[in-house]
Image 1 (tube, helix red, strand yellow):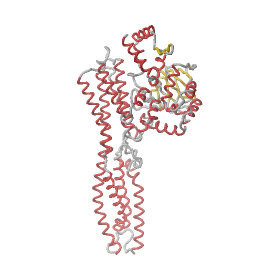
Image 2 (image 1 turned 45 degrees about the vertical axis):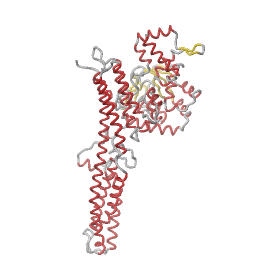
Image 3 (image 1 turned 135 degrees about the vertical axis):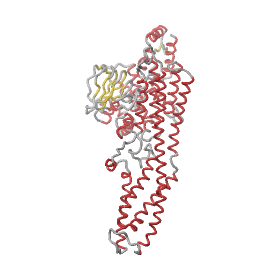
Length: 601
């Protein structure tokens, strides 16, 4: 009883603070029914109601977890891996007819929809009064039975979007069910809006995993909603598409290199000779062609001006007045080639070391996050049958969720191509797509962004949630466990901080500037030096040397940007695919928990 009273008092305080608008959707409906207003004075409940509610909580513990609104329950980004939330974005179609379509009743439903709308990208700047109520009234409450189809990827148009109030949908693409979090649409998720925004067909199939209750909004009502958005619709579409493209990569809908961190190679000589993308040919062909044309022009000019006595395919006569004057330049060029070769190869070695170091660091971060989840899976509380207890699984799911968020936010802070996720619109989009819960979003919004980044907050969540589990004896509360946790967390933070330092200090400007001038000078002199020494044979020699020296310099500069942040020298075949690293980490976040669910002893 005392525990229940404390819980009720806790929610009373939060209601007065008006923070419940950010709690989970289920909390909205349940908590509102507990509030009464008597004679202008807010009163939570009578003693009779309090006793009845307390009795219910004690008799049915599930009600307590329901009222918690997900405080320690699995977050929306639940389970793992490399899946995709693509259908949660915008894939609608005719789908199937819902089991029932009922008139929407206001009160708790309205409160739930209001919270979803305000947290969405489309709810910013809406008038709190008439505009918001008009949109809410356009939703129709709808129920789907387990196994029922919401829509199919074969649908060529999208007629509606859907907001999940309770239950879960599963998402599949081309017959393959996508792992969570992207493949699970649960409480608060908005599904199917992209088909309405971009006027496209569905990109995935969505089917009810459990009985589902939610709200449908048809196309016309949604487009009318967009008209109320304070910005321009095209701007919104453009920004959302950029964010959704990032989420698609992180989710695994759009894969580079067949889903590998870097493109795999085939050692076959024929295969290597027939490659173009990701090779020095792709980067150096323009410079090589320019030098080839220069060399050709010099050969023609020499034969016109020097009155040659030698044949076209014969080496130039060193006794010819013009040729003899230019041979000294060839000697200078040879000395320059020696210096250029040494400095350029050393520069390339340093650039590759940085690239390899960042790659290794990424794997270390993955390993430490996996270690934390492994510690929990091994030591978490079990019942007499050997299975995890409910609170143990909740603890592991919470920590797994926070590790996934930490990982994506960490790389988003370094990669220009993922950085959109850290914007306000990016965070809201993550809420819509079920990657981030509204409660997590609200917490991040309250932080001082100038001093605390989302990844920093997530690391604190990981440690604090772990320690709370120790205090509750869900995992052993001993010094060794705490020390191990802190060691892993400190190593994680140190490794993370090291990435920024390595990228910031990758190479001084003066060094790169020197190498660039040295290589350019060497290549600029090559046509003159080689054509007067080799004649017509200097033309292919100039092309080959330019190709390799210019290609080595370009490759070095690409490797100095391992995350592909410089679009001028970006090569997706060389830069590592961070989305794969994130997807791998997502899968690892629940691997140990799922693997330890059943024991053979």
